[in-house]
Length: 399
Image 1: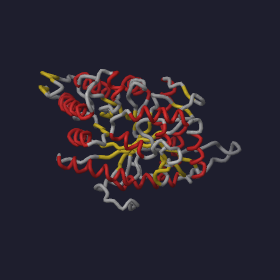
Image 2: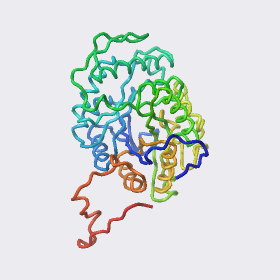
Image 3: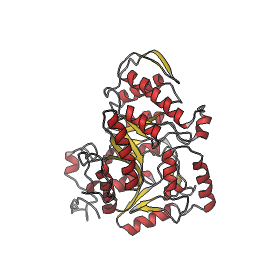
Image 4: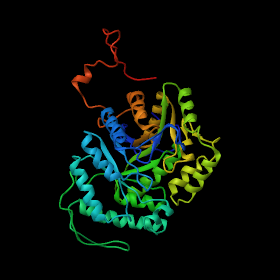
């Protein structure tokens, strides 16, 4: 399939993708910016989502990080024993913890989950929140810390005795005795749109992440990341973070998108945008520029809607449409080099099922995404038996 952007694509992958879901440890509900339809994000509720994602065959789940979230490491540790195949993409926060402590935590969680840990490197982009956590560094200085942190962390996880002295961090005789299952360490994911961020990603990480911009913007960003990686003699895998609103028809999907923001008023949007503007994250600036806080300018590309970004930091766009439309848009990103999608939908429990049932059959999924083979499942029945006698015919694919 050729991309409609007219821009040069990244080197082709195998044309297949993995799909991850999202654990909403900062809140969930049926409407954005409202207590109506909101849910208590308790461990039992998060367990339901994680076990649904595990059963449905998602590659893994992303756990967000920050002061508005339950701690991602504690939650992942609680849920790992309750799942079987599901991987947990958990954040390390350079500047908020010592690399030796982060390395021991990562090695332990990788061991107790039998190799199901993925690492999301998060430098942080909100100076106000960071000051509350004791970090008073400027944007590029924070990436200097991240670079030094990862030099130490990677060495420790690989079994080295680490001696390091940098501008910000120092370690003498550092070791991790109990090694992770994954060698030399769990894969490192990294999202950064600034030159400083891309440089750190190219030096240390395996997967470069972008938020859900229109294909032209994603192609431009991936081209910069690819160039930086090539200078280091390496190649990235590429992931994209998006929300999704999929229904059996396009009209139903767009109606659901409007419903999601139907409880937002102009005052709430203005307050949210003012708070988000304080961030010095280049990625956040790019997200906000897509809509400018104007609810009349939310369709930023075919089937790509920026309504979530009116009040939510970070990922602010959603793919909206029928299963075929959403799958087609995802294939356009795959053509650009994206080989993993990190998705979410409100509410996250129901939408995990909806997306898997409607869109999984239309995607070129890797074997690592999708239900594990099972004789019991293959023999059915699928759906309720009709009139207590007739077994429904299994249908592959969706509208």
